[in-house]
Amino acid sequence: MKYVARSGNLAKTRSQCIVVPVYGGVSITMSAAAKVLNKASNGQLNKIIKRGDIKAKAGQTLLLHDIANINAQRVLLVCLGDLEEFDVAKFMTVSRAIIAALKPLSINNALICLTDIECTGHDITWKIERLIESFAAGLYSFTEMKGKPGPEDSIQEIEFFTDKYLIDEVKVGIENGQALAGGVTLAKDIANTPGNICTPTYLADMAKQLCKESKSLSLSVLEEKDMAKMGMGAFLSVSQGSAQPAKLITIHYQGADKNTKPHALVGKGITFDTGGISLKSPPLMHEMIYDMSGAASVLGTLSAIAAQKLPINVIGVLAAAENMPSGSATRPGDIVKTMSGQTVEILNTDAEGRLVLCDALTYIEQFEPVSVIDIATLTGAIVTALGNVATGLFSNDDTLAEQISTAGDTVFDRAWRLPIWEDYQAQLASAFADMANIGGSPAGSITAACFLARFTKQYRWAHLDIAGTGYQGSGPSKGYTGRPIALLTQYLRDQV
Image (cartoon, rainbow, N blue to C red; front, side, top):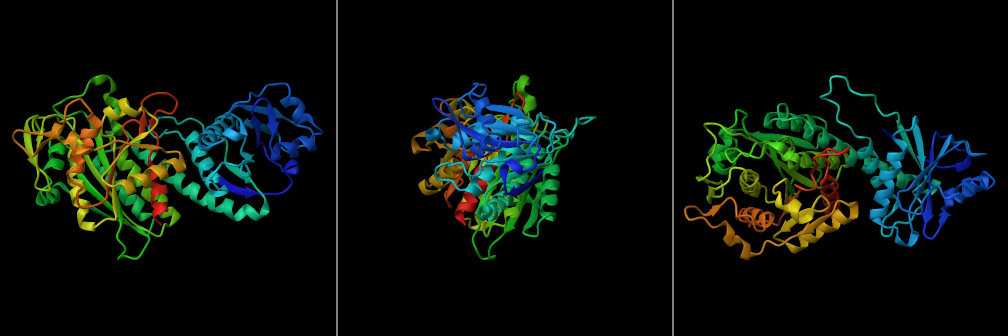
């Protein structure tokens, strides 16, 4: 998709579709762009609006053809709702509604007139980024596995209409938005690839390919023999039932001086999760190709920040393994020793994500990170608690938690903080080891975070549980959602 800035006489601009906003409160009123077109058409636009075919609700659209004295072939009206109530949520609703209305049309280009709309606290660059993010998501489809892929979307170019003095700001928004959209698309393609192809080795290959595309990225991969020498018994206990070897994949992004301490992102990369000996229920097991969504989000974020050339150092770690049942698989009741020296009694082999993460979180200590964020589809309990709206946020540092929450609010990729109070740690008690890998059904997402917290005492750490937000199991948007790449990218930008 090509995105460009455009200025000039709106009524005389040649486009296959101009998208102009209107406001809806008690009745529909016109924006500045709509007024320009209405004047040029001698009031035809206003006459059509008064018929009541477009409702006064954010996201409602009305497609018009061949408006008099307007060079554009089509005009798409989109309602913003009540101007006084227009906020980030409404802006995202409108963005998604626009691309949903444009996608079925037989058009190659469209001109978007939303850059002058007020959205409290956000500038034109932010608006362009969010529009591109929404458009890329609305047009995305994964067809690599189809024998005969369907036709491509006809839309090839999106123009953003603005005043001449704002064109440079629009161009910055386009660059940032395309970088983010590119990272999300990369992560979606990897996450949606089925488990018979997307193995830990495949993830390592994708990381290698990403690093080839940017001089600021470099790669190292630990094999199972390397992890064994380092004492990663918890990590290796997950992969020992699989024919696919585990990989600990580390990507270094250097955008600042090499002596500048890095921020770290650690992603859970279980490329397929049967539950191991604690076998999952069959009906939804096919969704477990998305148990590596945390790792995909790390790859997508690194791609985005490399394209944006952020002056910051970041280390991304992908803890990649496959969890399978076999004669060599870990058994419930087994006790393993972690890289930290702490021992874990594995009461449930389906609580495997925390086992690969705990060793990865110990491994990251050597880089003396400024902050560490792990991302994982860790617990079904977080879906019960927060649904598919907010990502679960846990942290041992109040400032870090606030920074992550603020970043999420900024890009409408929201996270909600839950406690990891010491009171919950008792649920992880084991009679034979330092801890068990599960804490029972009460507060399942919290006790999972409490488990990870035992391995993160040397640095500022946050845990994002994306089991509810990382993927959708059904519907037209089925697959990996791309969350929380926007949140992570914004957090890193804020640190600059």
